[in-house]
Length: 174
Ligand code: SF4
Image (cartoon, rainbow, N blue to C red; front, side, top):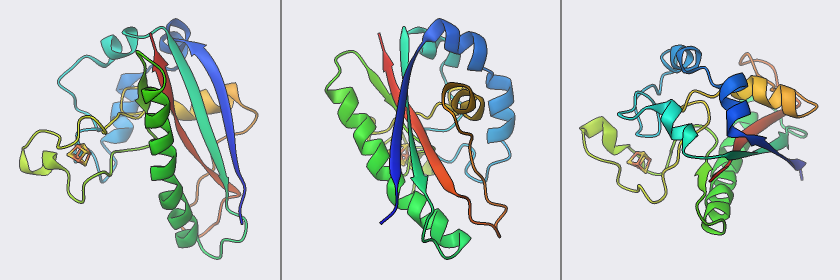
C-alpha cells in the first residue's frame, strides 16, 4: 500500500491571474509535448483563456501527492500515476457537481476516449465530462504548488524513481 495525501488551499482569482497566469510560457511548453493539440482539453483554444479565469472569483487548488514507495522502476511509477489520475479527475468532477456554479479543473490532459475526436476534426464527444487542466489554461502549476504547499514537483529523467508524483487540479468557483 502506498501513501496518497491531499492538500487544498483557496486562492482569489485576481491573485492567481497576477501571480500564476502566463499563457505565453505554458503554451511554449505545451508545444513541446507529444500530445499537443491532440485533445480538446489542450490548447490552442477558440476562446480567450484570460476571460475563462475571469468568470470565477476563487480557485480551490487541490493537489494529491502520490508516494512512489515500493515502486520497482520508473515505468511502474508512471503506471501508478496513470492509475491515480482518473480517480482524481472523477473526484474533481464529483466536487463540481456538489458545488453549484463551479467548474472542475483536471490533472493533465483529457483521456476519456481512446482516440480524441479532435484528431478527426469532430467536436468533443463528452463535453459534460471533459475539463481543462490549469496548465492548458495558462496557469503555472509548478510555481503554484511550490508557493502554496511545503513541497515541490518531482520528475524522473527516465532512469530515476521520484519520491512522489503529484496530481494538480481543483475547482473554480463564482
Ligand atoms: S472527452 Fe473524448 S473527445 Fe472530448 S476531449 Fe476528451 S478524449 Fe477528446
